[in-house]
Amino acid sequence: MRKILIVDDDPEDKFLLQIAFKENQIDNPLVFLGDGLELIHYLEQNQDSDLPAFVLLDLNMPRMNGKQALRELRSDSRWYGIPVLIYSTSTNISEICECYQLGANCYLIKPSDYEELIRMVAHTHDFWTQTAVLSEA
Image: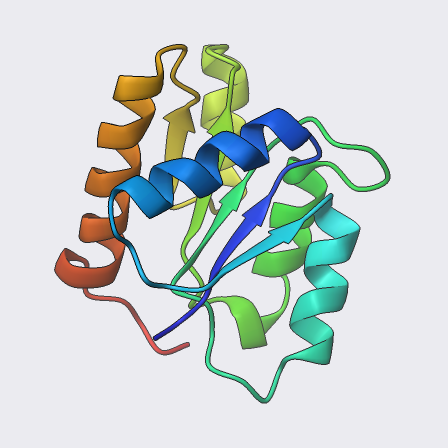
């Protein structure tokens, strides 16, 4: 089963996501990373492994933010086939458009309600692991 990479520096958001995946009985291994730099290092160190099912990427993080990480991912052909889902509180239209221009596959606004988070995790997982047909490269 392919891993899901969750890149977020907020411990509370990570905890809530971990519980939401567990409540939905999603068995994919979850890998939590604290910023974009950790994401790039993780992918470099695990390049012989299967690509992750998807990356859930926050925007506002230290060292390397989500947009910088997205730019880095999309500039390297080894990682072009990884679905990158932005996961942010920002509802700013220009920021959302910029993320799509940089190559984001999806932009999810962090829910303020836990039940909504549970539903979002279930739908997102089902779509990206069962419904979407993805390129190998």
